[in-house]
Length: 247
Image (cartoon, rainbow, N blue to C red; front, side, top):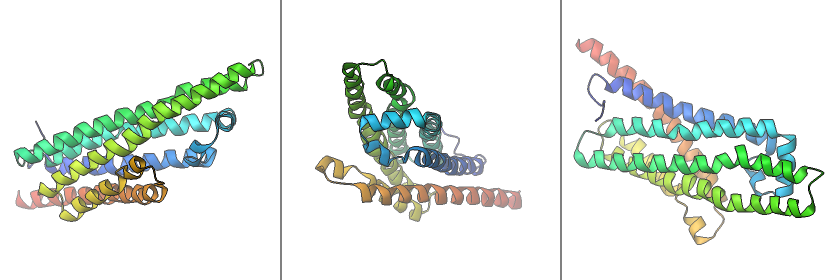
């Protein structure tokens, strides 16, 4: 089922555009809150005792920032649903590709959320335990061990699978659907394909530093989402105008 009909198409375009731009705006609010309070994401490389002190000193800001980041991650699902509605229905193969892309978007969101939740609930407990004057050295060692284990497990689930692998597949499969859709210009389809190629976690699989690639692709995808969202809003207004003229 899809609401991609002649009458509903302008409103679907407008909704998709608003969601794309809003998700990016919310993410950058989270980036600013976390960056200004704990120098995120560079602080993720700090040792456990330093992170525990940041949690003690900047706990409220970190909590707020990660909640906003959680919201921006969850918004991937409604964005993907709208993108699926936008391109599905033109032919069977395009609909199938869009359905696969939607499935990857849901998987990406689930893994992102699992990665973020450790900072909202588990890490504050470990920080309080480690910094409690009554805690013995053995208890502190266990807190550090649990921190390292959570980062190795939930961190890699969220960052490698959620942020990188499944998000890449989500964007890549939608790029394939965009190339087949009459509602998406080839320029934006190619831009999405480029973002997917740049974000594929090849350097993680090869064990090399992917910092510069991540930096470049972060802006590549964000600018795509913002400009494509703006295009869809403009296109929706144009479609409504044409409908009024033809009425």
